[in-house]
Image (cartoon, rainbow, N blue to C red):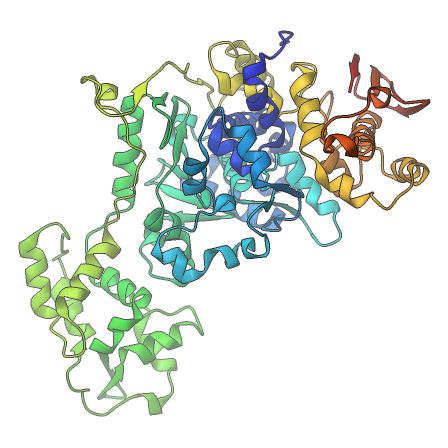
Length: 592
């Protein structure tokens, strides 16, 4: 049990482990791994192992294991991009919070809530409108909070959701924990990555794959040229990677200190580099044309039908792919062509167009390496086109088959050379959990390294385990960063507020001695008596702040007292006492 009070300078970070907003995770990167560890220690994902869906999973092939997990997550979780879920704050409040740790200009360059737009690609997409950010003015912004697995599951209680839900960071840490617990993939092979607009994982396992929101992207899928894959590629193609984690530590694009083992960071860059690069074959060329439709007008397809040859413009053949499972790029092409309306075909070759089947013959046993000038020159001879610049097509093709992401830089000191630049390494004790450990062993181990690894210490705050945590960060977060319940109850009288809490379900979304925050209680309309008392404290203090003092400071007579017993909690509000039953088994006393 951690009984030491949190130092003042660390209080902002530790309270942020409770609320886990997008802004907080960027400023305090340890929080991302803390959430992963919290999800691994939670009983929720461990319970999945008892689901018949995962029966005999240990006997499945690596690919089948991962696909089994993917389908479970697709069936049980939705992607939630409702930025109003966790209420509103304002830019200045958040900048003031973070000013001791990061300057405003740096934050604004790296966070969508403070003006980040991405590169030209995102300008073209109007990404702020896509995320719903355009409705917020220059000062008011939403809390973009990451959910624990418990909060994700609790979305099923809301009328507008049929199952659980979460945003991209929630889904990435859920996936990472589940890959460890269900598929038994070692933590060292699970790399968490964040960009300013997205969070996903690279898994250095079974040839490598990405988790992207609810889906899995294998290497073959990365190069299939579909619209879905194109969207999955946006973050790595158009944004800097701001953070990379695995069990040995992290690298962050802003901070001068890196904690990841240098060899592990090299391994990450090497394995993801292999994943993001492929040779050019006929199938890859055809996939490239699927994604880069402007080049399709350079090509045509001919085939034999009823003993006669006929030709079709490539763009017409690709258009028919949307109607079924057959593709231009693989051995189902003839079936695709047979399903196309006869009037789409010509009896003679189309002028100035390259015949794709002839290129297929060229590629047999002759894959082209994008980095070999001779290979690319040889391919260029086959791609002469009257409608487009050949060099433009070759350059786009090279970019399709090979991506070099913008990784966070590290100092050469990490490779054993003299330090040059901003980054240097510092110690982070490696998290040495193994897939054969049981949940109890994992909790015991994570607790044993709390003094050596801050992410492990923060994990118990993200876990909301008040039997192993100082209450101060939890209460600070509860009373400062839970605006939803305040806004939702502002029209209720005090008596109506008390009645609303009495009428609410009394089951906590967290087991044992773990606590929900006030807005979780309100959003999911359920909570233990202790959680309801803290919600009431938050609303009460907001109602009785002194307007004459700028709404920030409370009158002394309106200070309230929270007394917690294992089965009961009392809240002293000025001249009245409100009591709730509790099953959390906790004991505490706090002046709020």
